[in-house]
Amino acid sequence: MSSLPFWSLSGELRELGLVVAIAIGFGFGFVLERAGFGRAQKLVGQFFGHDLTVFKVMFSAIVVAMLGAVVLGAAGILDYRALADHATSETFLWPMVAGGFVLGMGFIVSGYCPGTSYVAMASGKLDGLATVLGTIVGQLVYAGLEHQAWLARFHSSGRLGHLYLWELLHLPPRAGPAMVAVAVTATAIGCFVGAERLERALAARAPAPASPAGRPGFAVLAGMGGLALAGLAVALVPAGGSASTRAAIPISADDLARRSVEEPWRLRILDLRAVEACAARRVPGAACVPPEKLASLGLADASGALDLVLVADRSLAEVPAAAAAYPGRVLALEGGYGAFARTSVAAALAGVATAPPPSPIPAAAPAGPRKGGGGCGG
Amino acid sequence: MPRDPVKFWNPYLAGAALGLVLLAAFVVMGNGLGASGASLRLGVAALGAVSPGAVASAPALERASAGGHPLDFWLVFEVLGVVLGGLAGAYTSGRLGLEVLRGPTFPRWARLGMALGGGLLMGAAARATRGCTSGQALSGGALLSAGSWAFMLSVFAGGYALAYFVRRVWR
Image (cartoon, rainbow over all chains, first blue to last red; front, side, top):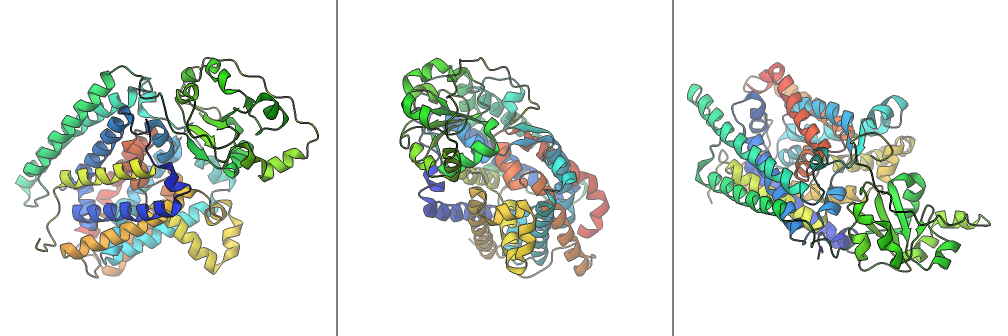
């Protein structure tokens, strides 16, 4: 039963969610400060080679969070795919590569990254404050120019949709994340050992002691190794079981109305109401599929590139098993069709005298392999 | 615990703690950590107060001010927490105090100018990359997003490429 994350914290329990946000941010800021990331010299040491703390902290954090998410996902406690699609952005290759390079240059010039500059500011460093102000202005300038044709072309170039490393390697969607996670962990531990050797070699030449691993550090490394073994077990255990029940991510009627107009090619909308009701009025682009016909769509074998949106008479408490097997995101319309009928899009459609004939139930077209590129929405 | 301004946590323990905070954000909220998105929100709010016309003239700014993406709200509160957490960390470690961090011979005003300029570069770049080192490299990297890993390698490449030319700021 995948009951996590608590999507309600960004929905009806929004106020509580914001309190949680402050608490999580507090932990983030406190740990960054204690790692030494409120001090520019500590951060730029990474780029002058004598202090690899940035690398060690960042990769340990990535490994712990990565393994935690994979293991919780495999245990069926966490809806891993929904989390990944919600918490990561789509891949826009060229802006990310070029922008990453420029961000790295800004990092070495200012001495901070955007997150650590807030920590530096909080600890009274005026250069941190200057970086925070610079970041705000930089964001405003870029966002202000984003709609201009010359920048818009660059900004949306190399769009690959939600793309993950295991998809790049053509690994299966269930075991793939665990397999890549184990490989990343092994690489990280190898790099940590190399980083310790490098620092020791450099310290022998110049007396600038960095932060050595020490005994607790090796305990952490051993812990990561143990978690990675658990991940390996997950990768080896045959898939299945965990996907039997799953909670849908709620989508508000306004969001659905907007997306059905702006980016219909990224949605696959299924209307589960009685065929007569659906035939009369439905969300634009929706297919009328009564629940008993769901299994015939072969959703488990679809590519998962589109967001599957389920429309019913009221909010869906649980996703039907046939739809739960869908590898991509599964969204459920909050409040059911009635909520959608109150949106401006539905009102505009009602003006059309006769609704176009309902689209036939699509056959279970086997989805081709996702070849990383092009196309609308990858 | 005695306050010692030059004592930092063991990097692997700090990393593991950071990873657990990130995991908590994943598991509880379904979001990663971030920073630059909140900067845009704060900037748009400030710009809107000074010159509402400037906000209305750019679609991306207007979207951010009209409510836009709910994630941005989460980020503003999360960054408020980062500032509070950073303050608590600096106070309890004895690192709290007004100063400008720089190399021993580099002038103070020039350091502040560099910080501002570097921030500008990062702000613009983080918009192009849909997130900074927190949102893209850390959160996206932990969830194995391909773009996040390409971004991360690029950040290190950019830093190393320019490090030699700005060494006087720090030494």
